[in-house]
Image: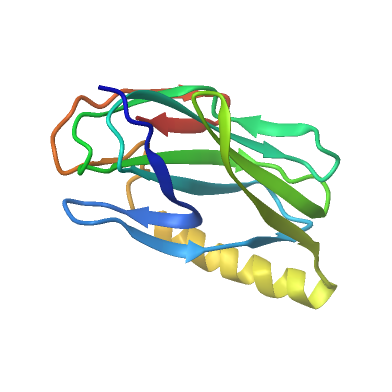
Length: 172
C-alpha cells in the first residue's frame, strides 16, 4: 500500500549528532556569511506519516536561479506509517560564490514539497575577522572528532545505503 509521506522538517545545520539517540542539530542556520571559503553543512529531512518506497531530492539554487548543487534522487522506504525516516545529506565544501538569497528545494518523487531561502549576506571586514576566528576554533574542535560520512536514524533497523558523489554524502 502506497501512502505518500509528509515532510515534517528540513533543517540546515553545521553539526549533527545521532549516536544511538535522537538526533541533535547544532548550529542550525538560515544565513551564511560572504565572502567565505567553502563551507560544509548538513540538511536533515524528516519524512513521516507515509508507507511505501519513495525518492527525495534536494536542489540548492543560486540567487540567479541556476543550480548550485543537487543530491540527485535518493531512495528511501517507509515500511510502517508510524515509523518516520530521517534522511541526512552532508554537503562538503560548497562554495557560495555570490551573496543573496539561495533557494533550497525539496522534492518527493519529482514533485516539489518544500522550498526555503538561505541568505548569503555580505560581511564587513570586522565581521569577516570575527567569523574566521570562530571557524578556526570550530575546526580545531572538530579535528579531534572522526568525520561523519553518513547517518540514518530509524527506530527499526533497515538496510543503510550510502554513496558519495560530487562533494556531498548521502544516506538513505
